[in-house]
Length: 462
Image (spheres, rainbow, N blue to C red):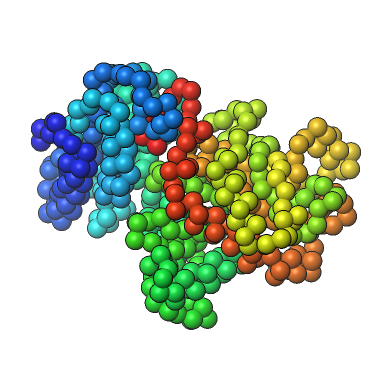
């Protein structure tokens, strides 16, 4: 099929969706009929935006700008899932420059394993592609020279098979198809936080004035009416169970229990990033390092000291990961609202993340040498990875941690004290993050700043 030129933004997005639907239906027909020669036409759609002339634009623009004229392209999967995002990004780019938009098929075939309605594990012969890791990489996100110095420049952060594999992994790890994922994401590693989030969701669904329309659980159940909490089955066989509190516009809140450790934090955010969420925030527990702290105090991370190592190949360990002020201010206001006058329980500070859960089992001298000169106020395992990958993927991030132990001050985490702390803190901790996300959703443009954009290796889209 010839490429269609001279499209406006709506026409371009509609055409992308049409071409993708046509390819998927053809793939289903081919598999059903067994006429696999026809699979050569099952291709991902491609969009090209030619910026005819470079001109200076509003220097506060957070996206929709380029450094030079030229042709910017993207081969896309699931344009239906990303339609609103694509329209917003194209609107910004075309408002800033004189552009031509062309949409057509790319040369890249869609593996049938990534198409719904087709059995994924079957080998259909040499004419039908299988998923290949050769096409799954982060060369654009990580600013590789070759990705930005070809005849066509990248328009979007990810290739189509990188996108498809990320969506498949999200569904594998969380138990829910990606379609209902919301734009504001909370991470935890405690089932009790999930319980409080679900209770909040049920209260909201019982409120006739709520903005939420449904609650989706990792067992596939969707709750849209008043249901007693005791009647829900929250048990999950999935590694990172996910709970979507849905709005009509997709700007609700998703909570994911990511488990423990920086590797899990990287795994989930590597996949979530393709869907371009508006923000993600960690609500977890940490070890306090200041003897003036008390169990239950809150730490609002404003800097990140990375000792976990999982992203060192992508971001140098000595590269600073800044806080996002818009997230910080909103979280601080939410804490003040939830806790009222008890503002002394929260402080900002550097969070140090480690891959060693038993870091405090070092000798006193080793601990002294490890922490000497550090600016850390707290130690956890996930926050730095979530922040660093947020910075890497241009997704605003934050962390609000509750002090659960003071291992340097004779208050280690022991079962009795931990359970009492959990019982007293879990609801308020969750509600601080929920209220912050609701506030951010009222004006998402405040998060779309230049702070997460790089000096080099940047694409026009957010």
